[in-house]
Length: 121
Image (cartoon, rainbow, N blue to C red; front, top):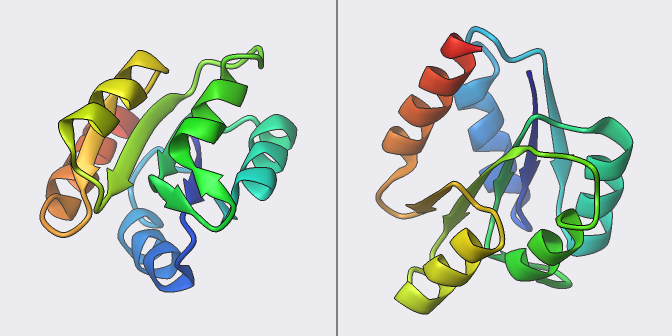
């Protein structure tokens, strides 16, 4: 499975890669840090899973999610963010996100979720 990690923080991307690199079922980890590079990576490499920060350098997860709806892809979308307002969560789910995790508290739960998904194929 290909996973795209889209986060404006290089440190967060690096740390997530450390957690995910050895999980069974993960073949490739892609990276992007803004809306444009995210859409380029997603369109070009077609990841089956996307870990998407809500706030990016040039926009938000909503900008990415709205454009994904126009592509013939159906990735599993996981939002990982410090923006945990109910309205943000609801809008992300409305636009296709399957999971929404709090960056400050839910990373272990998110890793477990990814591991469960990749293990089941």
